[in-house]
Amino acid sequence: MSTSLNPTADNSFVAYSGSPPPFGHAMHKYFGFDPEYVNLNHGSYGSLPLPVSAACDAISRKIESNPDRFMRLELAGLLLTAQTRIANFINADPDELVFVPNASHGIHTVLWNFDWNEGDIIVGTTTTYKAVAMMIQRQSDTPPHPEISIFNLQYPTTQAAIVESFTAHIRTLKASLEAKQKPDGPKLKIVAVIDGIVANPGVLYPWRELTQICREEGVWSVIDAAHNLGQDQNIDVGKVQPDFFVSNCHKWLFAKRGAAILYAPKRNQPILKSPFPTPRFYVSPSDPSAASSTPNFLNSFQRNGTRDPAPYLSITAALDFRSWLGGEAKIYAYCHSLALAGGQRLAELLGTELLDKTGAQTLTMVDVALPLSDAVPATPVVDEYIKETLLLEWNVYAAHYKHNGRWWTRCSAQIWNEISDFEYLGKAFAAICLEVEKKFGIKAG
Image (cartoon, rainbow, N blue to C red; front, side, top):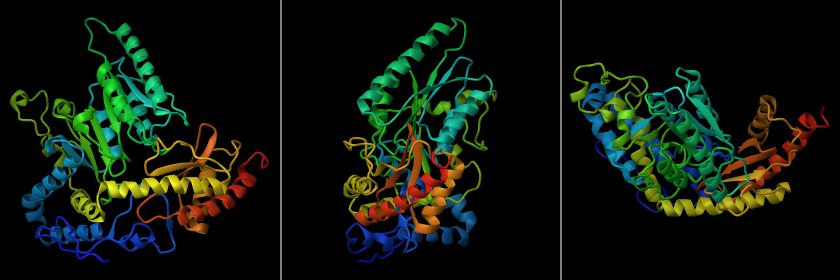
């Protein structure tokens, strides 16, 4: 049944009449996909529902009808509405949450704002998202050159094993930090960048447990939860209490690209002295009024350069759309079940196996081994060949990557997918992998 779009006077959300169709291919009409395209890669860029797109168009028209009135008088209230909705979604206070363009931007903002000392340590992992890994490297390359410690993470593994190994890693670092702490020097710190869901492989990471370990050991926790909103159920930052938490709204939550949140509890907001770029609300520590200045955390992030506010405001419409679909539990149940069943079917067709055989780390992305030998190198040439063949010859896409000596595909299960999509991807990968092995495998050498 089709929707009736009923923008409110401020065009901040879309209401619906009637019931949604069953999940599966019947949901295609609510998205703007090429009818022939088989999309099993929602996780990379997200997918904008047409009703949310319509709400964004209405917002854009309202902005252009009177830019000054909208930007100067109306925008703050609409941002607060979206901010309050998403804050409630993760059990945060609205004044502890700001919008940023994407998760990478948010993580960069946090790392950029720490006052680093020589001897400080930043913890990443072997599976840290590449851009974030480069942020860590850039921070270490910049005086006073904090050290980098890499936590070795190789899948397949278990959540319990990760927690045990991470705890040992942190305690070893803590001991080394205490040994080099000078009595008259600045207090040295450890900052751990922790995935909420690993990008590749696309599995749930025990970020809740690792946050607790960090808190117990006096380590700063920075959660890169790029994939968590809309996929990881019952996110409760008020309970878990990470030091910082960053997540995209345009991936699994159905908001417009690019929109993300940066959660900073009040106790840590003084760390974030400035967003990027620095806004006119910035107060220098050398300013005589700094000590008596009222913190302006929200204003600093809302007004640090002109940008299109529609993606941030679309969060309200995205949450309305999800509610109309039946809510978070219904969406997750379908996508999770399809990820498990679709992954199993794909593994059968390829004659391979699932990375997470128990399903304990699988949410709505599933990782399946590809029939490629370790001799096929993970080079830009191979990557480009697979991408182009999937997209241009087969009109299908799922992420592919090499990890721990094996090639894998990461498939995203969404409300518009069915088992037949995984079967079509299986046909594509079976043919492509044969060609890749011939061109780039050991026989090619």
